[in-house]
Amino acid sequence: MIGSLRGRLLDRGPDGELLIEVAGVGYRVSVTPSTAMSIGEVDADVFVHTMHAVREDSETLYGFATIHERRVFESLISAHGVGPALGLAILSVHGPDALRRAVAEDDIASLCLVPGVGKKTAARLVMELKSKLDLPDVDSVVHAADGGTAVSGTGARADVRTALEGLGYATDEIHAVLVDLPADGETSDLLKDALRRLASGV
Image (cartoon, rainbow, N blue to C red):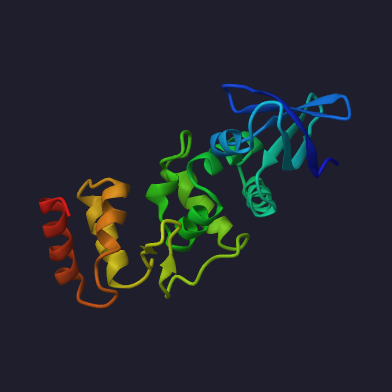
């Protein structure tokens, strides 16, 4: 099995495929859009961790910027009904840390943002991935990648999240308003506060 590649980037295709030359051999590697853009310039030396998928009719290399991303991908494709293509699609929408938070918080709506993932598939993925991923403690405050804080998935704020989803607010709007709510309080009071913030555009 091929676990990594280091070589010269010959081409970056529009469909998320890299062509990396190693010792005179060009390897076609499927990657997420973020990896495709951050891997380096054409003709530069690059490095990717890889997962080598072998099937009866094909062999495909999937590439990742970090070993952590590859391990999350392997956890994804071990879930029922998730093949490599869908696993890559999920990581294209949610990076490893964002995916771990979504699973820890039972955030089915976020998983439904992935093309081809409906509510039933998202709910099943949440259940299965809870035992496959190293999840953050949802009872504590988790620092988001932008330096802010992510919202705990338990307690009153989780109830507020569910209520706002039922009212038709988008996931981004919900996340933006929930991060500013206090960790404790009555659900009704927090919901009123959230609706007031949403109405004022805060």
